Length: 558
Image (cartoon, rainbow, N blue to C red; front, side, top):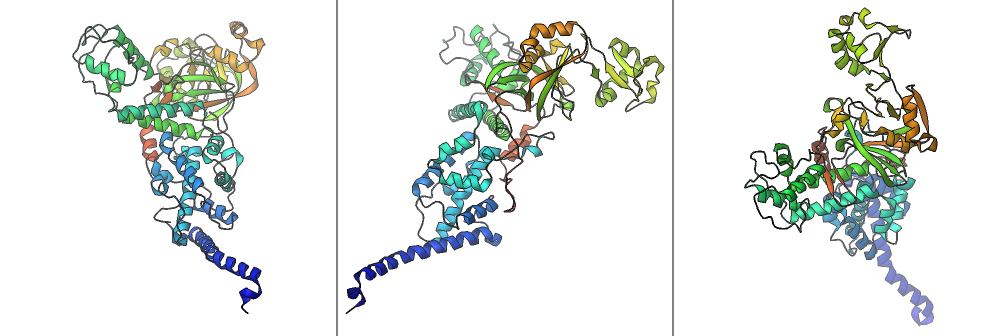
């Protein structure tokens, strides 16, 4: 009698074991191959791809006993759908391996191919998550004063975050929750989509050069100007056909003013060389600006505070955001190219009324000392006191200014008054750069379209309005501030609650109403950023398994 006849139950078990044995052996082979691929650098690259996330991948697979993560076709489809969104974020699809993994569906039977496929899918997810959270370019290499934190998503370390992402029932919503972007980012995304649609439709025509064209005048270029302004929506699509096609009529002049206003130009409705130059910037360049702004916002997008002050240096604007809503904004003057306003963050803690101004060493050496050498009376006219090391005020006519070329053994302090360089109030977020927000007696400069006139500090058009907002104290409303200023005494008023201050550099922003504003790259930073954004991918991931966190701890606003 056979074994099967004697023990049917045992025979069935043996048959089941025989059926499962190939699958078990295949799983073991895949696990072995995954370990070999990720632990032996000599086996790099994988399927022709250099792994940017190898340390994280090795820890991730080790934690799951080297079992593959992407056997479920539904999860693969979810990942592919997420990766397909990379262009909407201004990212290069190749950086997230979309061309490589976009066609991967069911797991192949051959163990080596299956292991490679699994690694590539996980690598693609890490790349996408990293780029969405931190951006592609290291801001510390671009901004000398950079100090924004770059903590990992919600405090999770990379391997734990990766495991949670792979296990998420729906990867897209999970990533959207863990990688918050904020309204600025979403509005820029909408702007990017809109300008890509314009590019797909052929962009806009180039307007030829010519004589200055003022409202009411005629010129054969006007029909092209009309097409150009209609392409971006400055001239409404439903605008009626003009009675005189070659006249810069009132409606077209108003559209031209709208265009000029969006580009930080003098909004006079005149077609001059400056406006013409900006009109003829190609749509591809505008798309690049939007991509760069998305990248810059990614640098600071984690841990958005509810309330903060933000200055867009490139856009000459300051805004106060309270409880995640724009509460106020105003024009500012920023540092000229030779004395750039640094890009960093700090915390505002007090305001000072009727401030004195201690002349910084650079301004003393480059600006004031040459004037004093010619005329010591300059100091008295400017209400600047000369103070020796003992704190005594010195008569400027008794000093041999010609003996000094770089510095002087005195402190030069401008006393409070309407002509003080800081105006009647300054808003302080103490920092190593000696940069702050302040009033100014030079009010006419706010009427300029491009406002790069300071030595690095930020002059605010209506500083009392901002002071009232950040103080957030009924005892210090605008009337109380004005009364204290009128008293003429220097006075410090502390904020009840410190307010974060963010200095950023965005050459493109998008308004909630869908309008996109573009600004000149006043500090010549865009070309290098775009080159890096389109260059090779390098992720700032932990180099060893002992590294527990990604990036620097902390939070970053916006």
